[in-house]
Length: 310
Image: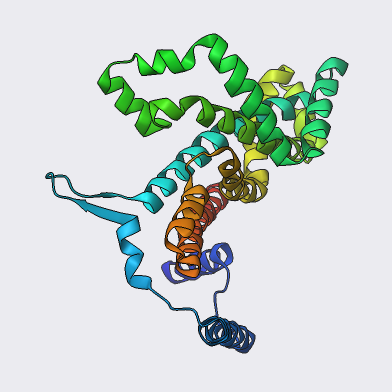
């Protein structure tokens, strides 16, 4: 038993151990000053060297616009593109996690066929440019499979309420096929990297834990479900967070097949207004909001898991 003072001291030490020291050093100040000076220099060169006329006042109207029909402020091009990027990222991350987990289990399976399937998937997808994968799925899946299944006609014939739900969750009814093609291509590409993260996490589990599960009479599936995968999640969470952030950034590549996500809307807006720097700086900030929010969320989850484990 510890005294109240000693217990309080130990708790404080534990919190400090979990959170780590967060102090600003002289090196941080020097780096911050250098970055600020570099930013000022870039702005100066753009303004004076290129004789660029900044017009930040025009940007807000492309984020939100006012409709006089009683709806008030509604999302405009940039915010609509941001919502499409969020949909792509969420669904892409969900599907990629499923693909990666299944193939990761195949990679560590005792069956030769399962290992060959997992290895072939990883080596094939990781050694192909993502742009090639996007075009293959767009022309084959959207042009052939979706047409054969009648997906477009099915969505267009839905009731208005169902169409609104499809637009909210995926894309407008007329763009569902290209959106699904881009989504599957993005998920398969990201899933190959998640596969290797899951595989390495499972293989990092100590042999003694496997043997303890076997001694308790657990089957391999029961060991994987109740013991190995929960431990694996804690170990692979940081690299998985990095891969989820990559999914957000990689979603920009689907702009080449005219998916109206954030990058596509930025290119359209830049071509129409010639507000080159204002548009791309705004898009950069929007992407940073997404990625930093995810990064901070995963960091909080890591702290919670470490506290639970301790």
